[in-house]
Length: 150
Image (cartoon, rainbow, N blue to C red; front, side):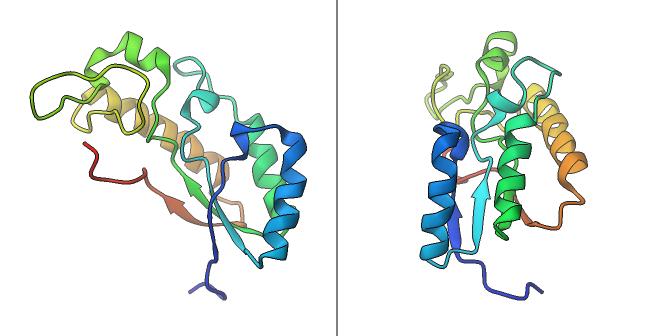
């Protein structure tokens, strides 16, 4: 059990200037928010090229939230695939009920039965878990995002 009820929501600081992050945290504290779900759509930032991982920005976000004593819900980033994946592995794109394969540029655009998507998503999640498993501020894992779009 958690000692407190988590009160917060999605927070995507990687999508705006770092100069805003301290102000965000200040406002969160004023609102008595104690948690943040981060990293939902960061796959392209974390893996800019296949097999090359860069956690520098996410490390900074985790550290800043940790220093402010926030509980962190770490998302897997698997809801928004990077462009390189679509180009190299066309089978990762979802196919709708009319048999049309979707193009790059939408969230929730993956095909969950694609062997390439599953392999690449698994590798990313493994990297995240290895890197952040021991972080005491991470209290839960957010596996994917908004099911039902596929």
